[in-house]
Length: 305
Ligand SMILES: [Zn+2]
Image (cartoon, rainbow, N blue to C red; front, side):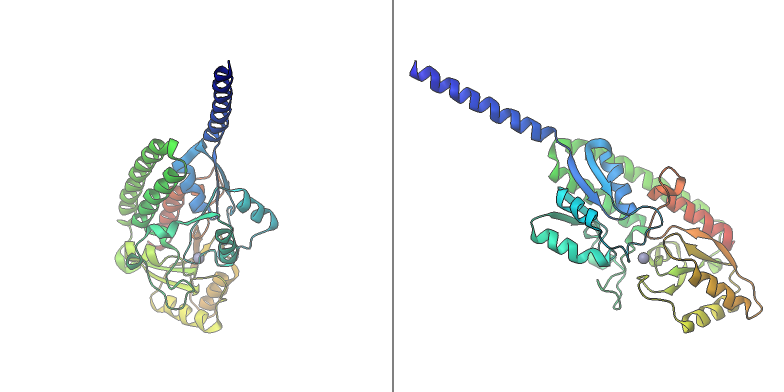
């Protein structure tokens, strides 16, 4: 009889333990992501498998973004924080540091890229240009990296993450093909991209564009009068047809540049809005990474050809 009670007790204990374990096993991984590019990537890889909270929406500048109290609560409640990194989210670094100190898992997506494959910049806080997503090769590496990290954190869905990564990389291959086709319409001598801030160096490197910008790698530095004069002279000398505004940067610097060109009896058009550090609104073409890239490419080629 005594024996029986012990076994029964052990069985109850075992079944209770099992129940708790199963509940945990069915719970979704709670993910917080920063930029809309990173949010889009996690969405592509995880779909409904995770509870995803993206902090920065359309038009939000990650260089200037500060964490609200609500954001800090979201960070605390998350199992993992995915961020772009290389000091892109410069004003969140301290918060991330605090989170790590408290044992929170934070993952910089830029860790996917070998340092020697990044564009170095002595002036910038991280020593590297943080706009690496404009290299589709880098974005493919980011895809594999994020899928692997999700698999480590949520091993029961490992197979799905791997399959989704494979499918997404195939879509990125297709994007590269489409980009090449689009660019056939734009001769190399016309590939000069003038924008508000220095977000397109990786793009320029891949697609043979000379890139110029009014502000530096971060929008935290304002454009100087000398920059406006220097670039307006360059536009006139090279007879550049169009310059571009960016969805996450105020339009005034680019308008000031256009005015400077006009004051010298020359005309330059505003070629449209490019999506640099933020994607467009959800549900639109430019609301996904791939759509954003297609939209930018079409806008650039149409305005400069
Ligand atoms: Zn930027």
